[in-house]
Length: 120
Image 1 (tube, rainbow, N blue to C red):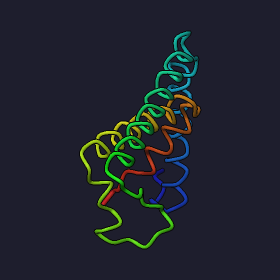
Image 2 (cartoon, rainbow, N blue to C red):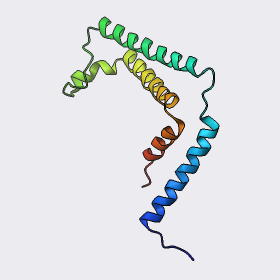
Image 3 (spheres, rainbow, N blue to C red):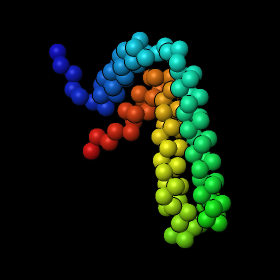
Image 4 (cartoon, one colour):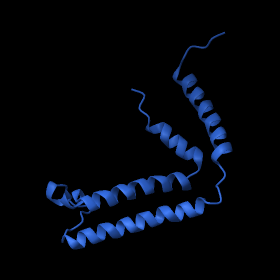
C-alpha cells in the first residue's frame, strides 16, 4: 500500500537519509588523524601571517582598514581592494573555512553543507 506524499513523509524521509549520511560520514571521517593538530596549527599560522600582511599594507599605504560597523562606501572599502590585502583576505577566508571543517564534527559540517544547497 502506497502512502501519499506529504510534508511529514518527506521530512521523515530526509531525516532518515541524513541519519544514514551522518553514520557513514562519521565512520569514515570521524576519527582525527595524528597530523590534524599540525594542520590546525598550519592554518592558524596562515591566518596570522595574512593578518600581518594586511597590517603591513595598511601601514605602508596609510590606509584605515574598514570596520564592519562603518558605513559602506567605495571610499571606505578601497583598502580591501589593494592587491596585497585582497590576497591576504583570500588566504584568511580559505584557511578559516578549512579550520571550521576540521574542528566541527563531520555530521555538523555535512548538515550545514546540505542546508546551503538551493533546491530551486
